[in-house]
Image (cartoon, rainbow, N blue to C red; front, side):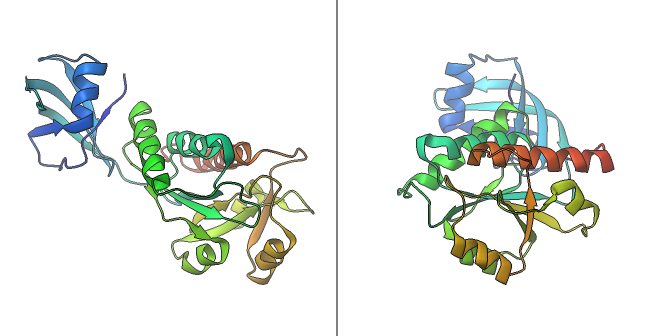
Length: 243
């Protein structure tokens, strides 16, 4: 069974009150009752086991039995991805939240086919919350503001950016990681049709590292999932406790 989201939960809490959408999910969707065991996450590293001790019309009370504090592993993984048609960017958010990505950077490129709406980021965040709950993730990833490629590179401080390219010869992610420092990694994925010539020239000018995902042309969402999966697999070989 999935865990539930309690963003205000603190490490010393003995009681947690849940209301709003999460109250509805627990009582009306999953039909939990008084005395039922329940797992909750605050999305910031705390996972708790408890018992539903009181249910009211708009709130429910959880009595906490145990809170487990989970530390983020390093290097962390982020992904920068273009807005995609047919909601395929939602798939990137969902699947990579399951894989443990900590930051999502939506970007707009020359070949981006979809324009952002007023609630694009809100929808992305809802997808991330649902995925976090489904896979019992202790961390809710951060969905950053939509930006251009130059803005992304200029504002990126915590991560080393690496770009997936189909054209030319490039190292694999494993080869890059074997010779890299332990700084966190942001994988940059191109849009439908790939990056245009000016964007590739920009990567060269900025000395951005490039890598290959193999000899097949991949859809953007496939490239995102494949690259993060490869990176997580590599990091788990080094640290079996990587989270």
